[in-house]
Amino acid sequence: MPSRESIATAGAPAAIGPYVQAVRAGGMLFLSGQIALDPQSGAMIEGDAAAQTERVLQNLQEVLAAAGSGLAAAVKATVYLANLDDFAAMNAVYARFFPQNPPARSTVEVSRLPRGGRVEIDLIALA
Image (tube, rainbow, N blue to C red; front, top):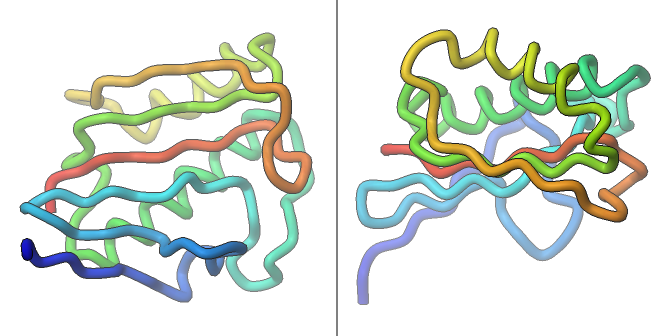
């Protein structure tokens, strides 16, 4: 059976269900979707889609760091927006976190996100 390792860090919000923050398998990292939860309080941060995108990407950075990787190693991102009208605000913040060689990406509007969030992002990255 191929090896599989769960990744967890206190620098990002704890999983709120039966899943882990990330899994390392086959030289890849598969990060669970992050919403804009404050890692210390576990509460959703206040603010618009830009503020939530900032927190989401910070959370993803922490998980990647715990795995010995970083955003530059991301190869695929999926962005879930509760309202596609927030695309420009999300995209402006997202561009700051991926200034060069951004990963492939899909962005979709969904009817709802956990805890009433406006943005959720998951990643696949090189380990």
